[in-house]
Image (cartoon, rainbow, N blue to C red):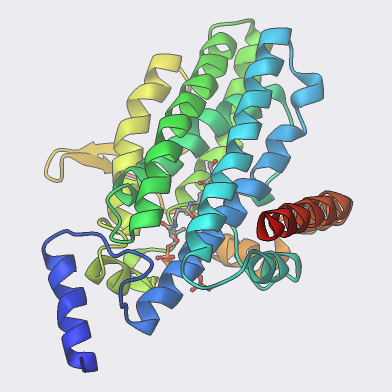
Length: 313
Ligand code: 3HC
């Protein structure tokens, strides 16, 4: 079969909303696009364990500690599914981790901000996991089978994370004046970095056109950001907290809120490696990788031995 026929089969599958599977023919740029996005997504999950892991030993109750531990562990699991999905496209775990550790690969900008108080853990669950779900619900219908299936489980767990965060915010916002002040302070600091999670405005997003064309994504960065704002305003009102944006205003014509853009110069600076915690996060990941060397060596030796006994039998 010549390349044109392969392309027709690929396009046909996309037009019928069928999944592309690892052994199917796919254009090289589609494969590269997926490896880039899925590996960045995987890195975001495992780097995202760090700002919250930081609070496990200081959680205010045994219940809060157990819930937070479960959540952080879930993020590690999400990384695992996503690395595995990316491996099915022909890259290796070592290559992906090497790109992370050498600073070549990106991960979500949001995890380069510090978690200064317990209210930050609530805000991360409420806003950051809330934004992640807003983006990831559409990825459950992504055109690449392994990515789409990984996202189904991830979304279920992210919903629990979002509720965990909102519960903390509810307790703090309706707690003592000091707790309410901490909740407001956390919202003030996390609001704009959360809006940045959706990526640059559509007109400045080099990857969006292909992502939509190939049905990797079904909605654009701006569409998702708008939907997130519309949904979150009511949640903030219920908590009696103020979103730090003087321009936030209902716009009847577009049936959505007008809102201020985040500082895109700050975003560029953070994703270029110069955010408040980039160095700390990468140092921690490199150290964790080094500390885990003996586990990888033992697992590889065990698998080799099992394989030898299987061959001998
Ligand atoms: N942080 C870091 N880099 C970002 C970014 C962000 N918030 N938003 C965009 N970028 C980067 C892109 O990766 C791209 O860089 P590259 O071309 O060098 O790879 C560049 O900025 C231009 O952006 P585009 O809009 O053209 O890129 P994308 O179409 O890839 O959009 C995205 C960016 C919205 C993050 C998209 O990749 C996506 O939907 N990814 C899947 C979801 C994901 O990765 N989420 C991570 C959130 S954290 C999380 O899920 C953990 C949970 O536990 C909270």
